[in-house]
Amino acid sequence: MFLVIIPVLAEWSARSRPAVVISTVPDSGVYRVFVAVWGYHASIIVEQPPGLQLGPPGHEDAPILEYAWGDRRYYMEGNRWPHVLLAALFVPTGSVTYVEAWNRAPDTGAHARELFVREVTGTELRQLLGSLEGGIRRGSVGERAAPYPIAAGYGGRFYPSPDEYLWTRDCNRWAVERLTSAGLARDGRGVLFARQVSRQLVGFHSVTPTAP
Image (cartoon, rainbow, N blue to C red; front, side, top):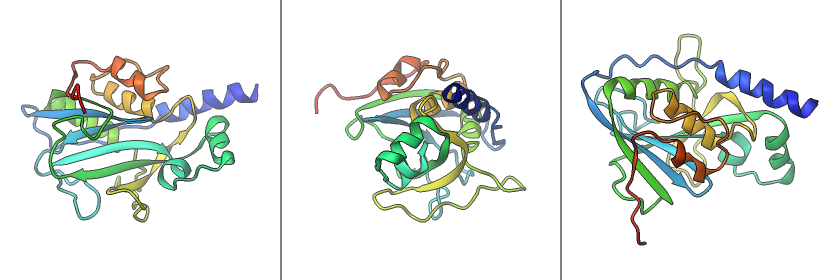
């Protein structure tokens, strides 16, 4: 009974998080959204319209932003001890949202196992960014929580997330559900593995090269 109740509570808590209002993206704009599969997990890469400041400290106005999410100890801290893995499987644990600034958009899948892209309207991008930003804990007036110190091996920054991590709601399902919020993917329920992500995408096409 205990193991049944925990996933139910995790489902409720994650679905209750509101999106952040992004009001400065013109409706008439056309932008690209990428979905990258990096082996075991997926991330979302978006074009940031001029005027927004959503990048990590020092790169707030970067033209391209990558968002990803996961268990704090496993993802950010690189902690692979068995008790950490077991906690992520059976007990809701703390999570982080990762934001990295890119100078240019990915144009091949050379650095990712799979890469997908589609164009979106300003309205769709605004909805997607609001959902992605909702994965970062906010202060009393809506500002982002401060990022954690720079993590070794990462070019971006990790932020505290209000959501809890559990195996039924992992990083790949998180990515699909963020896309679903903007009408760019089908339901994320049942998504656990990175290879399942592409099956849920709507309107994307692959730009992964056929040869190394």
